[in-house]
Image 1 (cartoon, rainbow, N blue to C red):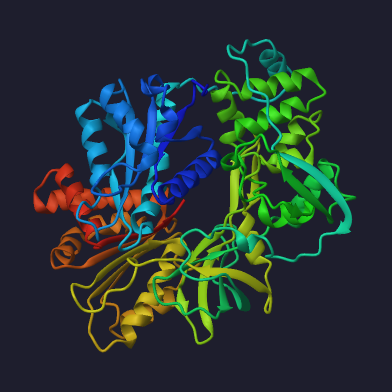
Image 2 (image 1 turned 45 degrees about the horizontal axis):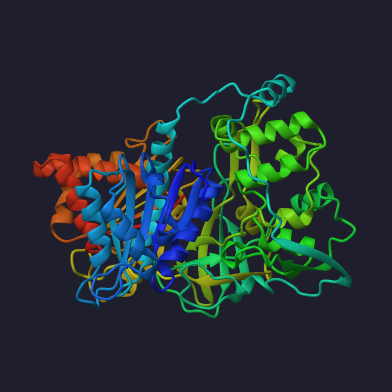
Length: 608
């Protein structure tokens, strides 16, 4: 019998495996964000249709034949029609291929059925086209999913305790709270055996067998040619670096690539020490899957032949937010009963909000959680199955050089509130590793698909908007325009903190403006007192008539930057100025931008 109390269901229908792969990625990412999402194919709902009542559901479905449901969704489709769910909140991502007459037939049929049955959509429906590249719709749709999904789940149980701390009083409190439901035992998925031999492989052996998200080319070893700090050293600014890589693959303006990064050496050894495997850190182990565990439940990223050091250094995300299964396992490993009760409570339905406040909102690492519960002694083998894959990090090409590509990144320090109520800084995994690279070091990268975020030559021109490192790809755009014999009207709007300290590529943009490649160059500086505009949204509002005029004349809009801040802010400002200048409602303005997105005239390269 399936569990009856998930936070959210993700139900997929997949004929070729693409919808299933996308669904697995969504569930993986949701776990990192502290969201509880259970993955099911449609036909696994047989006999459990009541679970849809008063439920939040994410659907990811494709079509087969002449707009028919996939085989593993067919029975579920029949059950839905027989007994429509009550009080259902949903969102839907459809996959199709415009080569077929009934493009998106079944996703559209499911959408129409849900609307007619009274279900409420909490996030926009999108239909991805395999003919032009699923990722063009899938990636921004996933990026935009987290905020509305988090909001609707928060609305179901809004009882956050902002003063929760892990101390003796809390342990006493949690130990005496009643958990209304028996929690499941954590099943060990692998049998584990150490060898006396050292593990001989070197990075990226094993890792290169992983599926690389949206890869447009093979994994290659590039070489660092130079690393340059672009910003003035100051407590007021982030450190921003430019790295030039020598690559074999051919890149162009608007391209991006994935970087395989490493976990911190110190953090890895601290974790090995905490797990009591320092003496066998480089010894080869062999994992044998338990024959009683369904193959689809086995984590595909866990290497069956590896060493503890290699696994933690290169393959597993030791910074990911813990899923409840991991907390239950840590509870089973506690010698101190109160600590075990605390972990079990945090993993229960009743403890969800305390878990969010204590661990998720503070982004506590695995090492920090283990330090809070010192009597927990997990085994390395069991821990393997609970840690997600260390995923690639993505960067946009800022400039194509003679030998390869250049890109920029901020050395990220995530400021968060610790359980002691102190603000602490945690260096980013990839940015810290990149910052430590020197000339001649190797970096494994692969080119990613990107058919839309490409510069326009001629036609209606371009309006480019970016903040921070989000301005980087536009340098490549302008280099490309400078080499063309066709004149292209161009507007660039950039945002930084300080003009004198961190105006990334400001000199290069000014040069393009002076030589006529860039027609209009507008800036915003959020921390400069004398700046007319603080944010790029302010620039759009100040020059609203000109920008709307460009759009009316066919200009393509390019937005690059943070998904939660810049992307949302620019979108909302565009809706506002379109509504005001064109005399339409904001709802109609949103429809206009949706049409621009479908036509490839409003393009985003964003990250979370």
